[in-house]
Image (cartoon, rainbow, N blue to C red):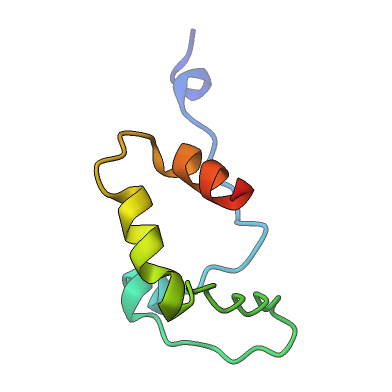
Length: 79
């Protein structure tokens, strides 16, 4: 074997250009872009609150109950 066969090939040129100024910034300090083509999240629906007149009944049901949140919600929805 000669010395030429043991050498590595030179590195390839990147397919996409690399912007060095952006790679050194952490994600949290990257400037926010207002790209109109970026997908927007739909707004969250408002939280459903219990009517004030039903709050005492709700507290009585929840207090001392050992069900999980999901189980408790299922029972309360049936009432």
